[in-house]
Length: 191
Image (cartoon, rainbow, N blue to C red; front, side, top):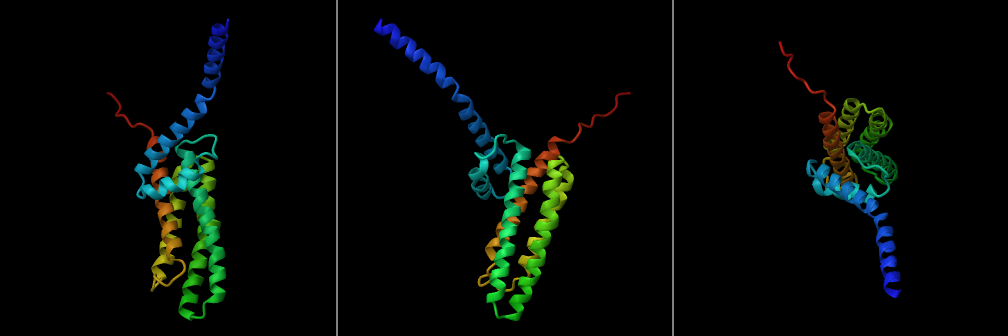
């Protein structure tokens, strides 16, 4: 009798554990998809670090979800950068650096209010071509800010710009993957 109770208990325990396997498998497939996506991006380690921290907050992780996530992270980063520029601007006395900050402020405003907002809207409509164009434009704006910095060692936006440029590059690589998988197959007409 004790043996049958043990057998039933173990069988029940084993059956109960089966219900816990799907979330584990789901996490593993999310993680392997993340690895696959990041290996194809130009900044593997940054891609993994950036996306891995947010992967568990998503119920569905697919390529489009990862593209949207990188855009959301870039959007948040650019928004924080705008606030940081405002804070640094009032502390700097050098007119040349103030001019650079004004230009960067304008660039990051366009990144947030135009480019990334439109990219996120396009992702919501599965319009990956427009999303790609907007992300590319955001990267150009960050690069524009970066190119105006004459002495990057002493300038407060150096790391922020590099991070933004790299996030845009990662986003572009993921969106390119979406564009490749959504292209119609072109087959020659048989005559």
